[in-house]
Amino acid sequence: MSTDTPSTGDDESMTEAQLLARIEELEESVAELEADDDQKKMTIVATQGTFDMAYPPLILASTAAAFGWDVVVFHTFWGLDILHEEKSEKLQLSAVGNPNMPMPNALAALPGMDRMATRMMEKRIDENGTATIKELIDLSLDQGVELQACQMTIELMDYDEDDFHDDVTVGVGAATALQHMAESDIQLLV
Amino acid sequence: MSESFDIAETLDVKGASCPMPVVKTKSAIDDIAEGGVLEVLSTDSGSMSDIDGWAEGTSGVELLEQVEDGDVYKHYVKKTN
Image (cartoon, rainbow over all chains, first blue to last red; front, side, top):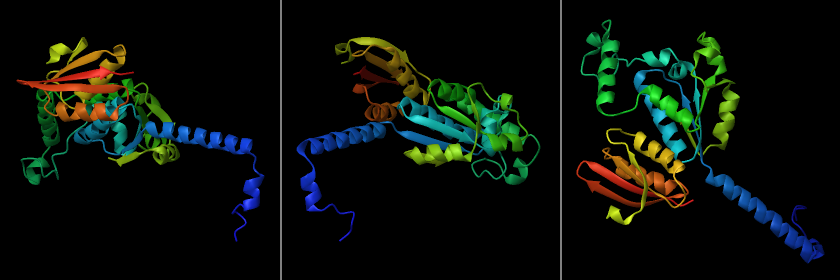
């Protein structure tokens, strides 16, 4: 028999008061666990910096915050450009290798085509009443979303911490992202 | 039917699309008093499913009714606590 299994003698040696105290302890921890469970957490890792790929993480993050979830978006590599004050204004849609573009790749590769495709998309977005990237960033921050900029890639891309929108969290790395992911109900890589 | 609710505030998000109706609804709900009913006016057809889903998954709110009135989708959300 395993030594971990309490013998009947041990059970009997617990007084009623001890048992009641133990029950109370367990009830408290169950209540704590249930309370923790109420607060959903989501972590999104945003790695892409094209105009179209900036949208999904920001839309999901701001909506999740509206649910009252605790949301972190960890931006790394080209995903940093979404948070970069200057670059986020100039994100481009790639016309090349995009099968949804109504033009062959040979044409799409011509100079100025990415710019044209981006302008077209921006026009559609405006007509559709879809928010701009800047609006979604502000909205996310207002709603309490934590937008993180990966420190290693800030340095790799030769960016400066001051280049990013105010309220963006800098000085974080993979371990910070993993820590939040481990506690998250939802983890997405975009 | 909406006349039966005592509307505390009306949020007009006509013309705005996902995720704005839900996100703005959440902000507006935060600003009204407990027990108050928020009326949300939207032209986004996705708002019918989205605000329903949001209300379902969010504590402290209750979706009382959703009405399609021509091009406008009307939502009535109560702040329960």
